[in-house]
Picture (tube, rainbow, N blue to C red):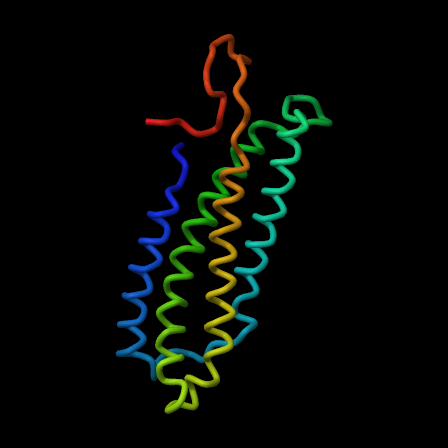
Length: 163
């Protein structure tokens, strides 16, 4: 598994933002209202990914990775890497969507009452999605295992394969 490119995440967020801005421009009257509580799930995933990133990084640095019950399992670390990759991509795409919505409601803030009411929810969801993407990338980067020759081979020993 290769590391996720931050540039690719930003590019996908911008593309999702452009598409969502165009969709909101045409269909804004059909959209349900946005509330701040709609970003709760994004915040929860961002906090979980951030906490896992800190925990995994600390345990790897302390050399507490292995098969013993008191150690963190390498399989768990690889699952965290997958979760981090997924959180990064989902945060990027959802952030792009809410970025497009936020731009639209800020442009229409002075003339539409619905845009004024949707602004806090759109901005909060945008911030939550960005936090989720950043936490996901940090988690993915935290899952790198230091080099070692556990397999009897000299190699990098990390979770990610390089092309």
